[in-house]
Image 1 (tube, one colour):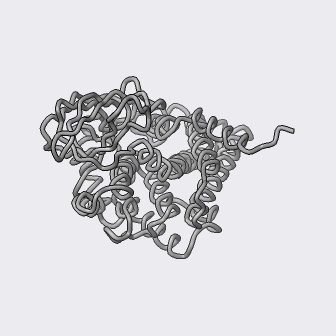
Image 2 (tube, rainbow, N blue to C red):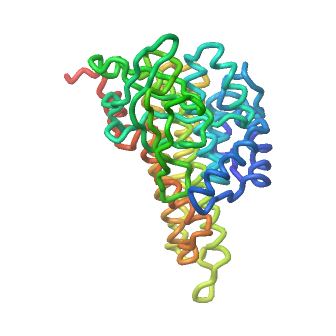
Image 3 (cartoon, one colour):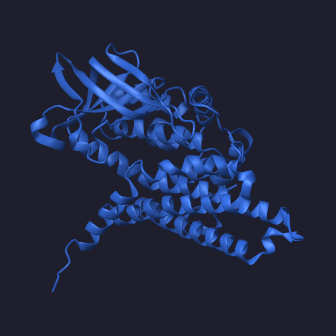
Length: 385
């Protein structure tokens, strides 16, 4: 269970009370939900979605579309993802994709699009997907080749997207495509594609180290609705809105790893005494705890500032995302070292975390991109004299 004490200065009573209820829900419904294969992950994701629809998914959509058990702000979003990351990385991924797929509609969708999908997302009745990445377009989003051309009241898409979570099982996709390649990023639009639309193709799954419903999708004269002509800006706004929550998920995974390492160190006897009495083990546990608290403070500082209405949080969010995800990798690796051979077994919580955490350093902006963003902000408007 996540202890909010380290970051309570950033939270309201409403956050704390909801976090307690969320912790109990996660223990009862989601703890160690960990499919053993990608095929099983596709089935489990739907089950998890329905459970999260019991008041927690609404944190990912504006309050006017659904009521949430958690305050619907950046801190609430972080508390949800931190608890889910602690209990089940798959559940966290399911939640994250609901946010990624619904945020573009919440920010720029037509009222009919919003009413059709956002309440269903919050209830866990509609699964969302966010389709931006292509084989030749990752961090360089402007190089995407998927195209869109108008035809009557709709658009036709042609192209291929890869590394798409919920590919083949989503009820709707937010797809980014070039409407005018000559304009670069300014020629990228955002489109809504429902699973039943003619021309939408599931091109097969992609297998990750941690079971996850990932795959390729294609478009052949695929019917789509326009969400926004300035799709690049919308996509960046979406990622900006949710990036700090990636840091929170990393904190949750690191907290679980520390819990498992501490418990093992107290129980495991070697050379006539518990591992926790050996100074090298104590050093590892101390370093893990320091890294985790620093990550949480950076994360909830950024979320709190966002909730205070700060418009520019580029540096704070970049710091939180880069530091928390890198630190989580280090904490989980240290936990595996403390737990020893037992943590190498595929059914051990730390081994699952070891595989699950790696993607957090890549998606929604790699660590390297976060460092570039931060450096750019640091050097902005500085007089070299």
